[in-house]
Length: 174
Image (cartoon, rainbow, N blue to C red; front, side, top):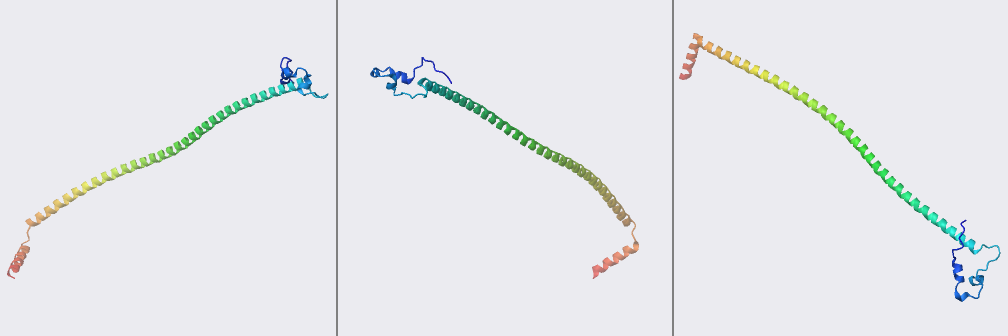
């Protein structure tokens, strides 16, 4: 318990000095005549001061706890932001993996398209070669047919010519 210095005046001691109370005893003025065994005014005052000091300590502790709470709330908010960043990073990693998979699919499709393009180029080249060969063959066959028809005109069959004349004359008469 804290002891109170004697220089501190209590409210009851201030009441003792009022001029209107000059002829009365201090206990009679205060109306505080205490039975034996009850604490004295000094003890009550010391107890009140000790209680006041305890209240100030409790208020100081409360204020310290509030500051600590605010500090912890700030840390909690920072951890939440960091957690959000970690979550976002995880989402970005998943998106990156998805895009890498798509990129691999596109690369394979591109390779397949290149293979098809090369194969179509080869087929087109083969087709052009075959068309040229067919064109040359058609020209050769056409030339041979022309030569054959020219040769058959030179070697005329006299009986066939006579038959043709008779047939032509019959058609004119009839």
